[in-house]
Image (cartoon, rainbow, N blue to C red; front, side):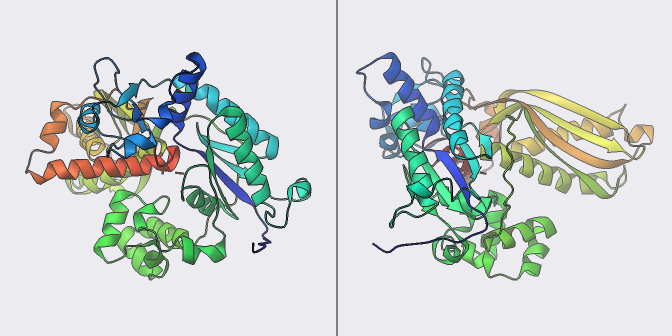
Length: 427
């Protein structure tokens, strides 16, 4: 076996639980019903109302995947593909229990653990070479030896598996952990980027959303390598300076090395932008649409990344006198979809600014606009409503487009929850 040695200033792990929700539901069942069948070994899924068999799939087993079942699809459709599919209900108390035990183990190995969701975390292993010198063998150098010990301890003591991605920055560590699953260790150091990352589809680049990937593919940028070798000025011109720069530098393997030890589960998701010129009654109709579409896509991308949905949509603005105003609505079903979020946010913005008591009627102009979503859930009780039907009723191809969006949603979510659960999402 070839001996590999590493010599970097930073060593960062990204550790991601494989099929977290399904695995944890399976472990709970085995614990409460000793001798029962392991849900991970049969076609099974988490999601929806088990009794009524409504809602959507939020996680699935590997055997269920072989039937073509995907996260994000209606339970009724999954049952048509596999009538014997075993459904289990979401159980966030159990998920928190296993998540806590998972993080406890990680804290034993690193002085700095950044938990980014219930089932994934970054570890800063920089400077721990001496601490773990006794683990080093000729065929398992540092930091591979530490990753192997962590992975095996989680599997042997908690009963579920993880993937470990290793690099010198967080982006590459995250990308590495999404390689072949389950129970695997992958490296993605700078010299490995061209071979391991550049051949991947551009949509697999962490942080590259569906809209951005579609736009890039329309101009012939189909792989991460294509983006890495593109003209950065051209990317910024097409995508905007911030997104264009991010895509170029990320595709070339540049990422943050800062691992923060703080973690707080999000209670809401929002984004806002200060406008280059004030929004007025005269330019509102022209300017508000691209603003709200940009903000809705940003919030939606983060919702999908973390595998959550929200029922309350809020639009907030700041007027030129620096006063903040907001308007919100409660939805019947929670959402994570950018198109729907845009429709609701446009309705709220129109009401707040164009109504009989709106800001423009009061002579106000707007310098900042924000869109937010709160009242979060995992989406397992979302029902397909008349809105979903009418939303895609313009022509027969819209149903196919909806399926593609659901599949892409699952891909994004998998960044957070592993390839076989609700993710990619990430980070």
